[in-house]
Amino acid sequence: RPIIQFNGYIFVGAQNNELWLLSPQTGNKEKVITLPGPATESNRAVHLHATGGRLWILTATGKVYTLSNPEAALELHAINQYIPEGGLYNSMLIDPLGNIWLAGQGKLWHFITQSNVLENYDERVRFLLKSMPNYRQVFRDQSGVIWVASDYGVIKIVESEKLFTQYLSGGNEDCRDLQCSIRGMAEDEEGRVYLSYYNAIHVLDPRSNALRPLFPYHNFSNLPFGLVYHQGHLYTGNGWKINPKTLQQSKLFADAGREIGGVVSVGSRGMIW
Image (tube, rainbow, N blue to C red; front, side, top):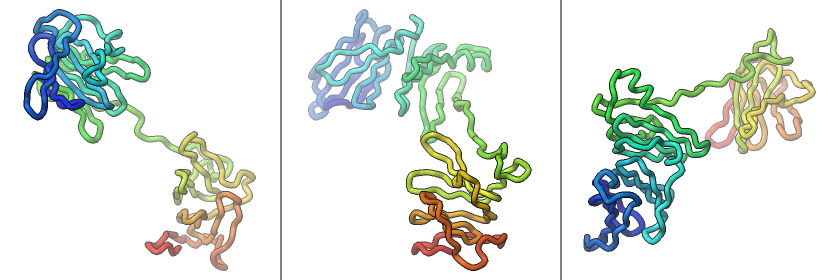
């Protein structure tokens, strides 16, 4: 039977379709909440989960309810509009984005709350196992990987997504032979990323993901071997100090601008090396 502490009570999925609310101090039954539907064991609560200030309740028939407090009415979640009727359910998981996993006998659903999309993972698992598993529990580890306990062992689900994105890989008017050989990267206080390469510096905006030249009129030539940002200025490995807001440039030493292969860094006391 599921049990959880929520809103000052111990909630227990008790007999039939009843939720018992116990006092944490005395253990006495203070209140009973009756779930909609028949008063049978097939309609009992099988999983309780508290997150975001709400109690989530899964019944054996796959109905998902939420409760804001013990005096409020039960609310039927939107996922019930998409899940087919019937089946036996065991477990539920709510991820940090509010998406829902439901697991049961031949049932493994993933509901994306923001877009109201229901994904059937049982079809994929059954194709591999050539059998119908009974999914007992869904677990999410600290890295975000989903693990499912079943009578056919533990199933690991890794979301397929694009892991890498290339920038400036196709070249531009500042790149030699249409290849940008990146030599240095830096970041300012607002999260803008500066990419330094032969002939120019580009800026990547973290909000729009847009990439643009730092010097829009291409009136800057760089021979970079490093790049750092410190207190409102960019410093290049070949001796240039640049204000990214005004685009004012100044030399740090007489040989600045030569291809000297310099490496630039900021020391623990804020000194540029």
